[in-house]
Image (tube, rainbow, N blue to C red; front, side, top):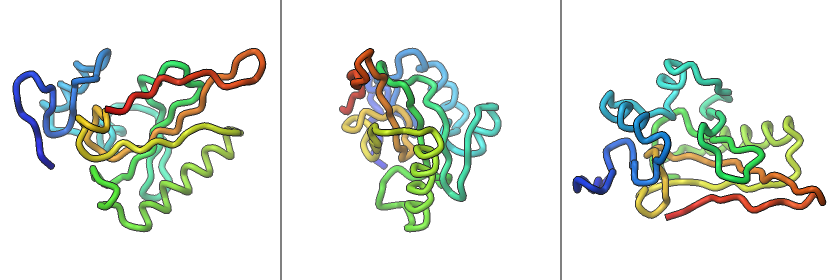
Length: 152
């Protein structure tokens, strides 16, 4: 992984705080400790609720996109930054997690967005390959409302 270490970039080894907003302090503290907030050991330590299905982990986004009714994150247990780094069984576990969760929650539609690679391009704050499951809120007519989800 190439890291832009210029003082104002906000880009470190594990995080890019350029977009962090309200949780910049949390990311900076985790960076100092050298831990990834999406990795299993740190999720367990933090007390956050999460669900595990073999090598896939799912948890609520602490900072959901504006307009989202549901905003979940699905990650591989193994810390990787590129889709090419996932083994086939990890892809299958992530897909199974996605299917199970959407069926259990009765999700009729939404989006599954992947953040990967260079965070200056993807807009990711955490350098751990992750999938956003986003379901928009519905208006009084039952139509979806826009969800603010930024890339780049």
